[in-house]
Length: 405
Image 1: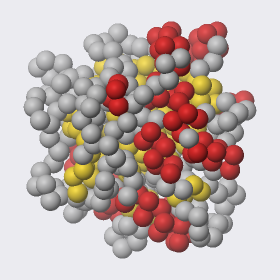
Image 2 (image 1 turned 30 degrees about the horizontal axis):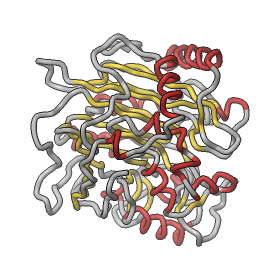
Image 3 (image 1 turned 180 degrees about the vertical axis):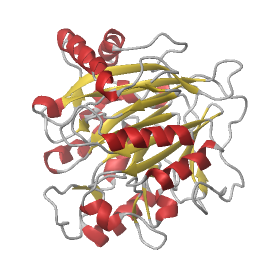
Image 4 (image 1 turned 135 degrees about the vertical axis):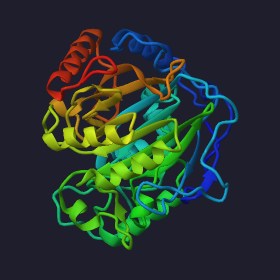
């Protein structure tokens, strides 16, 4: 397992250990070969260079910077944006899961995450950058917000995600402030000492919209997070110049500006949104408009979760978009609530091309088990789930190959 990142303060560059990911993240010897076969059998791909899920030669290092104005960012004490030690080694792989929390019965997973969630490691750890949405407050204090559902956990949740192969999380969602200002203070304290970068939340808007920059073999990856769920959290706890909270995408203007700033400093720009309409499998009009705005601003990958259902993935021109990754590590494991998976993207910069782009997609269907952990289904169920996921691209109005849609 990699050495922990020691600081998450914006403007402070922090580095992880330099050993190989395949050595650093151990996978049970019995589980790994079985899951590797499942990955090969169920991947949905487009013909393009590169192979998804390939291990990296070194762990990503990370820096989080604090923008001084919309769409701009200033280097921290290191004096420069993150850069690689040499020429960029393309391609790289990115892996994404949906919504995660460790509340109620799912809390027991934190006792020994390396064992309880070991089945997820083969899907997350081999990617160069893996990411999920952590949909919970991190506190044992505070009062419940005036809403129906409330999720809370301990700082161990961030360590657990790191253990199973996650490299960066977003906390821009409608449950990050479920326990009011006291809970938010605790959450921000946990973020500051987290063993991995956390985006989409902060003590003010500059911090909430600030990207995390991760280095992968000379490739600079910028990751941003924001929420677009119009509820109590967005209305009460959207971060401002003088108030802590979550990054809002109610209007994509500020987020698009942050993407433009990241575009000027990074080789790959990823935006993870909390968006969409509950229990729907097609994106709403605001999701589509937001994806178009972020693509125009320079995002290479735009994706998200919230609807508790999978939504379509594919290309919007040269930008890869996935409108809904569904639940992931979750407390409900019945019916469509249990349908999930891991999206793995290969990003490459072909010779002579000025900008990198997603050249290959691979979706691995999983089903959330009774303990809250997604696992591979039978071969027949996997084929059926893969076909259903591919069909979702139709109402999402996305293309099956780059340059279309």
